[in-house]
Image (cartoon, rainbow, N blue to C red; front, side, top):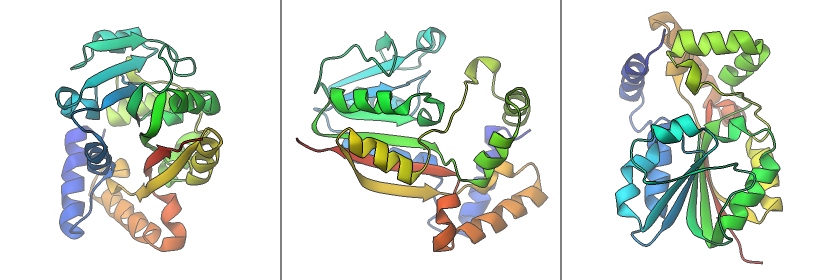
Length: 241
């Protein structure tokens, strides 16, 4: 099993080996922080029980969470304005939000085009979509996708200690820079920032596997292979039409 405490320990070791390294969480948090202001209206799309919004909910004009999972909303850790609904048919007027957050959601979208169209609709002009998601081409995701769905769920429970209620189907239908850029461009969103982020702790079952993870990180540090990193962090801007 690789609990979060163990992952963080290996991340700290890797950071000592590579000064300046940040895993996807801090990179995403930094991106969010740069785009939130005291006057911002923020939508956390697919908010679950919490996440990065917990750091900023009290620092913005309005923070709203939307999710299809009622159980998660009932257990949300900070937001007071919570809405049960589909990301593909959001119950909000157009041009309402300055920022849409989308952390650990894109991989679960069965019809990403419909969701992206709604995100673009509810964003105001010059608004930003900020996302964090697994990379469909990373070695971790590729191995995961080769396994039968039942075995994947068992591994997620066993290896990462995640409860069954927190395991949702994954499709990876927009989980590459090329697909994200193309699908979001069609709804009027242009990429501003994009990061391929590595993390050897995802296979750090023990010291030997951690060393293997470090080797894979070094290989994918080579520019032609950077697109094989485990996570994607990005910012997209809504352009006026």
